[in-house]
Image 1: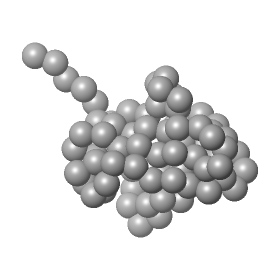
Image 2: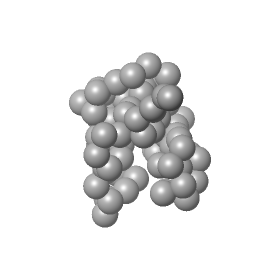
Image 3: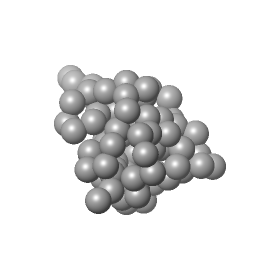
Image 4: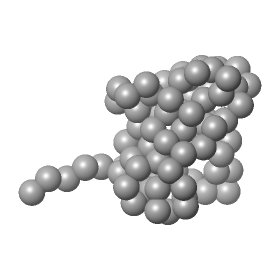
Length: 77
């Protein structure tokens, strides 16, 4: 299995795809997932994250089979 990584809204446009898969190399934090996939690109400021469809901090541990999502803040009007 692997960690499924999804990108939403303008972040999806920025990275050029809707999702990635990351081979599970042991427990990783949400921030480490981003760093493994995008080592040359810092995580944009104010990005929201979720693990298995629940908001999660960048320090949240993820494991094999989890889904991690990165998305910009949502505004309403």
